[in-house]
Length: 342
Image (cartoon, rainbow, N blue to C red; front, side):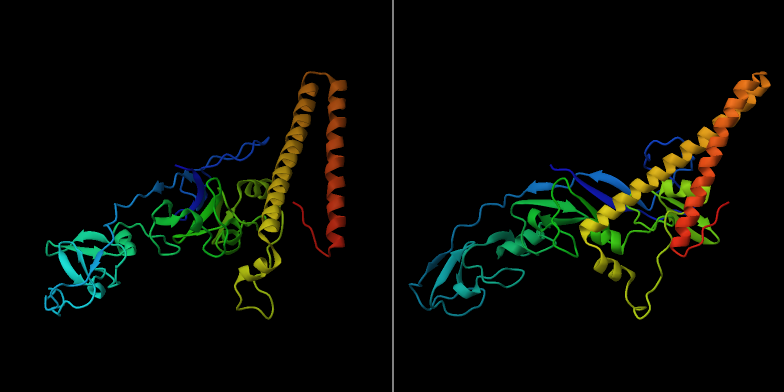
């Protein structure tokens, strides 16, 4: 067996939840929430890769010419003239020896099967494998060799591809499932993945869901914590529609603008940026709180000189904070945007 990683959306949760994933370690611990099923979670399955060995085919049909032209053959009741075959304990016209299910002439090979009347009947290869539920969901042909089972379907190894493009999934590749179909990272991200309310990037792993102003929002855990503690969103939401293209699906413009490589690179860059913001702000806040705590402790112990040193260190933190705010204001002004701080 070969392991393949799959991401499956589950039933949507109701309120705040955070489960199934431990984000990168950070100075501030994430809050504990009641465990509920996440909308998207990464799980690992082992799809079945099976070697199918069909039963031995009946030997090639014996095509003969009748010795007695007036002999009758039971299925059609017509005189036995021209080539005929002997198979399954009976004699057939060459063109009368057909698959029991589809009616295709099986002159070269067939698979015998017991019929409802207790007599054996021939089946073509496709219908025989169809009855065994061994048909490729992509090409509709028989699965005679190795195959992959995923999303309650079976595929030839070379046909296990994205439902919208030719991306082929190897044994160690990731794929995404939606409504019983498989998708590559690019098409799942643009068409089906929920967008984070903080960074507007696709949510492909665990998430936090909250109800704010009678509206459900989904967040990456780090994006949610940044917004909760410091009221910061990494990027603003994109416009809901483009003038002149109001009837066009939202993913069309993104798929025209991005390639699979550029979209994945952008997602990785956003994830790294969010993680850095989270760790830096957490470390700064804890360092500032430590300065205040040490300063008060030194005053309480009567070590006023040490308290003054700690106050000097805290003032340095304040200078860094206001200097950063000034830099942000300058950046917002250059983009004709207005920043707000609380």
